Length: 181
Image (cartoon, rainbow, N blue to C red; front, side, top):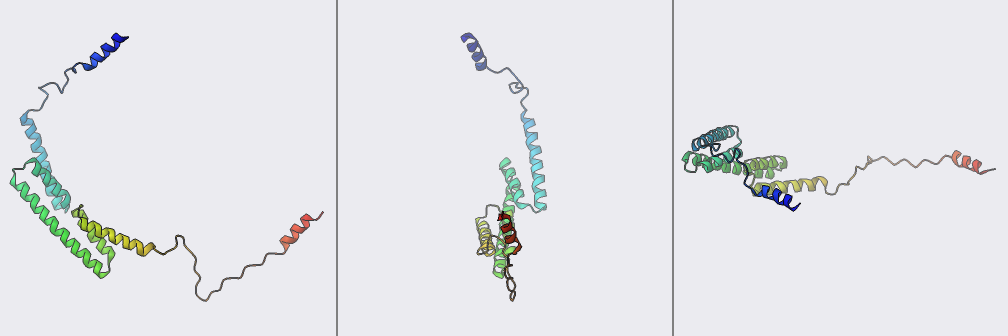
């Protein structure tokens, strides 16, 4: 029994058999790796340009950042990413201004829309997120505070409540007859 366990454990401790990963001929050559990176780079560049054209600047900025990490020495990628970051910052500032103007006008729904647009451009913008939370708290306070949790029926002015109906006398009489022998 002990010999069988030793045999099994020694089989686990041995080096794995040569498979496709162990074969040095199966590893991609540097040329193949460069071609794969080039294809990936081309697809990312096309995707970044397409996202910019569609107005999805936040996603396009991330794609440009991937390209900058892939090719840090490539100046056009760095310039494109920096220019897009500046456009995003300007658009966020514009949306925040519009949101604040909408709040001053007393249009909380429009303000919320502008804050959401700012967050779509820059999801980690704390000022827009805090302002949107404040709008929601105020909306909830106005809508629900002091209202009953269930619907109540209210009477119109001038209408009196109907007097309660008297119980019919036939019922007690019938019960008295049932008690009689």
